[in-house]
Image 1: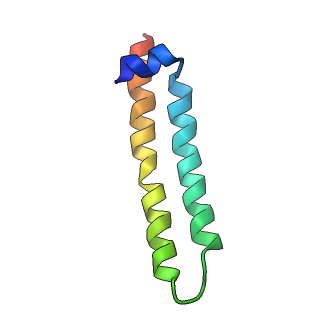
Image 2: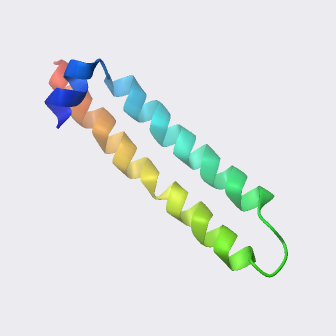
Length: 68
């Protein structure tokens, strides 16, 4: 899968940027969520989005190894 990602033109920076974007998106979702009855749902969504970051960072690390 990593070789395919490399072949399409993705590099390690894409994984790292996607990880940071996930963290930022998680914070934005958490802060702009509703204060009404569905606050718990908004918080769960923010946590879900934040959990993507380690996966993206690991993809960036795998692509970094492939670049060497």
